[in-house]
Structures are given as structure tokens and as C-alpha cells.
Length: 126
Image (cartoon, rainbow, N blue to C red; front, side, top):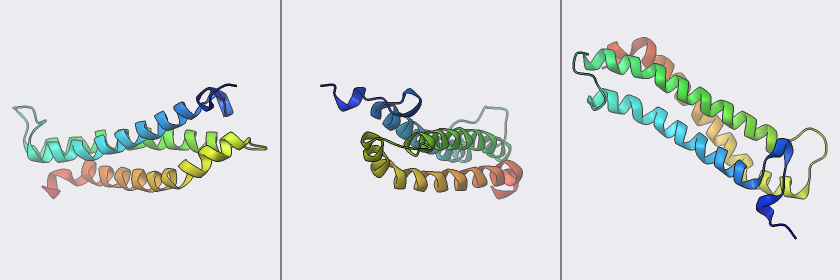
């Protein structure tokens, strides 16, 4: 018998790959939140830039990271909710990841909106 980790779901995905993508999207969203905080404090600011401008520029990185996280979440959602028939293994992973993925989707969208606001008005906000 093969272990559950070797069972292939849709598009060659295994449970390990599903959880890997789930945690990768969490890391991307956390990084998207930390970068503007670091820029506002001045930790990641180059010497010749003002904090206001650098905070504004960090908004673009926030938007980029949150959109990559959204892509990973959407792809993973398509894996755990395939069109047509699904297997019992897919149903097991879907039950575990579906609600956390929806929460991550909303958080990622909110972070993207916040990053857009920072990108547009960050120099005024600080």
C-alpha cells in the first residue's frame, strides 16, 4: 500500500504539495504585511531616501506579494475543488483546507487593497 503522501490528486498534486502551497501563501501574505511596517520604521530604507517615499514604494511590493499569494490560493482551490468527480483523498484535503483558503483569500485581497492605498498615498499617510 502507498502512503497518503504519494497519492496524486488533480494536476499531479499530492497532499504535501497542497500544504506546501498553503503555507507558502501564508508566508507571502505575512511578508506583504511586514515590508511596509519595516519601511515605515526605516529598517529597510536606503540612506538617501526619506521614510515617506520609501513607505510609499513598499506598497508596490505589498501588492505584488499579495497578488502572487492570491494566484497560489486560486490554483490550490482549483486543485481541491476539481471539476467533475473527485476522489475520497481529495475530499479529505478539501475539508481541511477549504475554509482556511477562503479566509486567506479575503486577507490577501484586503492586503492588496491596503498595498494599493500605500502605493498611491503612502507619502501622505506617514
